[in-house]
Image (cartoon, rainbow, N blue to C red; front, side):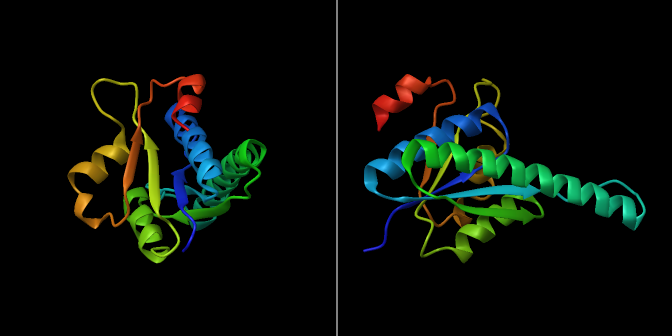
Length: 155
């Protein structure tokens, strides 16, 4: 039987930190694995190729830095070395594509809801309304208002 593998989107939001902490607790408790992914959105600015390349490289460096910081947190919390991915393209499309590609490896997608009462967040909104039928793994939505102590109790 393969291990559970928890996928977390690393985007620098407050909610991301909650999702990551929850995933770490679940991975540690189940002797599972962690997969962390960050996305580089397409650049919509009309620029020269060289300027566009510079912007893309800066975005990649920022994504990699966020991933390494999140990976260090996960390693410290769990002892687990996470698998890291940087994907270029529209976030939802690339997220669903990654899950499909890793179908035998990713077992759960963990996201945390926004504290904003108007929307749970763009990723959750898109997946639960327009793209729910494309998701082929369970989606775990962690309340974004949970404290670290509350998350620890859930483990």
